[in-house]
Amino acid sequence: MKIYNGISEFKRLDKAIVTSGTFDGVHLGHQKILQRIVQTALKEKGETVLITFWPHPRLVLQPDIELFLINTFEEKAILLEKFGIDHLIKLPFTREFSNLTSEDFIKDILIKGIGTKKLVIGYNHRFGKNREGSFDHLMAHQHHYGFEVEEIPRQEIDDMGVSSTRIRKAILEGHIDLANRFLGYKYTLTGQVVNGDKIGRQIGFPTANIVVSSANKIIPGDGVYPVFVRLGKDTLKGMLYIGNRPTLNGLKRSIEVNIFDFNEDIYDKSITIEFIKQTRGDLVFKNLEELRQQLIRDKEESLKIFTSHDT
Image (cartoon, rainbow, N blue to C red):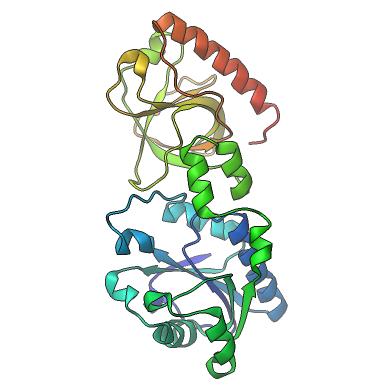
């Protein structure tokens, strides 16, 4: 898959099968659209093109709201490549861009810039200034524009009960197993391993403290999670804690993972966490020994859960 930072980097195609949108999560509903454009491109002997906007339009148009995202751009790109997209165009979303009319978007980007032969969109998808562009408008003028238009029916998406908003809520509340069902893959976090206070090491459960680089990335709800840990080419098993460490009178939220059967120095390295489910919420313990006993039970439960989950 080729990635382009703006339409100016893209070379117009003869048979471009196109879709556009934010695609935060690349969830099962999004995957319906991706499958359709890939199938169409194979049939028409064309190439798939996905137009996405970065940063997320709501972060630009509504800067005062708190919006957390399911994917970073890099995570989104990896997922889109897995689903067979040939070309990914990242359009920088600015206030100036938000004033582009739907007519100019169609003319300058879809037709002149890309060479669209077929456009596939999700139901109720709109584009251009004030979201004025609609499927009905495109259908009414598709012969004039010179490309076909297809809309994924609302029922196909609604029957799944899936949306980016619902997934964000599930992640924030710690319902990772539900979020994973809607996503069709395991939710991930990527960050850098940093120094901690090494209290976990004192009680037999050393942890790698993680700092997530993206400020807008959703952090799951406080608690304990069995996780897969991607470290370079290796996939390891562990359990991850998110919370303020109330037993230790913690003052800030911590993300730390105990990697099973692992004792290497990985400070400053990047690791990716794949969540399976939450096994318990955050708890307060009377002392470190009580915490240690609970961690033993947490590890036993995590190991049982791994028996029914592939890496």
